[in-house]
Length: 240
Image (cartoon, rainbow, N blue to C red; front, side):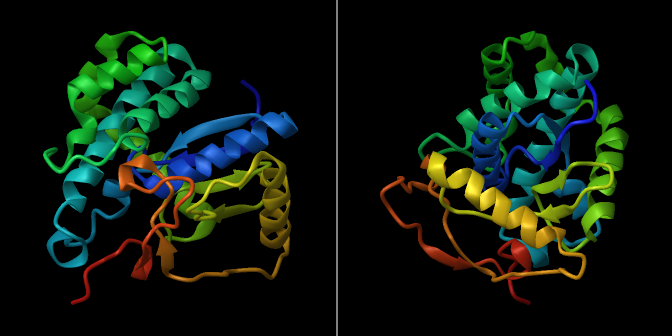
């Protein structure tokens, strides 16, 4: 695979990264872009923080689940090539974020062996690659790729990070979207985002109020507007 048009850094459990990835796939189809789906681990980039004081109680288990799934994705990339990561990410998202909420599931359910096997199978990959969920030898690679992503934007961001026309092109965090644009709007929105981000003096346009994304995992349909929440610091951290 040559240099991609877009490098998209994702954590599999992040709902806003998933929503943005769905939009990017629409744009990709209309513009014939190539996308390299890369890794950024929320657990690793937040390793310096005390989860008990900075995040809601379930976040640490969820972030660990994302790291476990990225280990599987790392093994897939090594053994089956970079092109295999996109279908696997789609299979993860379909099982994690496109399913109805279930309060009986314990935090971290996103990275059970059963879910990983089902996603691998759906992506046409060997199910035994789920054995890499606990493969900590892959964490150095994931950390390096996470650091690479943050070197493009600065550290006070989350996921996704998009690098357009790398290595010299513009990189930015987000955009964070709660609604999926219609196909005839997707490319227009993309052009606006890249145009703004490409201005040399541009740094930030932000608000911390966000709608819950229109995803089944939040119980929000495409016909509904999600509850507005204040994601202060971009992650709903608990106020001290």
